[in-house]
Length: 188
Image (cartoon, rainbow, N blue to C red):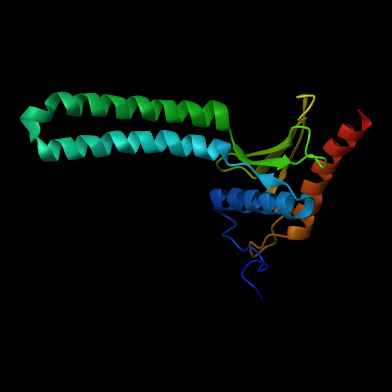
């Protein structure tokens, strides 16, 4: 059995592992079943902010190496201040811009003329809770109108006693949510 088709098995008592397994399965379903192209702009933005913060600390380290402490005091203070400001910006970015989004897929226009339609998947699973919330948002490329649908259900619906993901059940749920938005899209 290939690694890609192997059943996903996790520790069913680990909430993060549960959420990550469901999120990864939803990404796979959206990419393989619907042919969406994943957009990494949100992740690239976070990576750019983190790179700037690390660059500040590396610059401070290099400067302190070249000009030992008493001479590098001002530069170190500036770099440390920039690092903490960037850390705050990263926190705001994660909270307000990403906000639980784990997948952004683009549905290319068949004619190649109109802008891409955007499908966004967001999830949440609170600590010590079994209620998994999956929200799918559709944004039309031409109309820019946004519609969304969400489902809150217990993670026990998708995992068996041994902690193996019942992929078929979860796939039906994700496809049902996406198809309900697609039906709304065609009706309008």
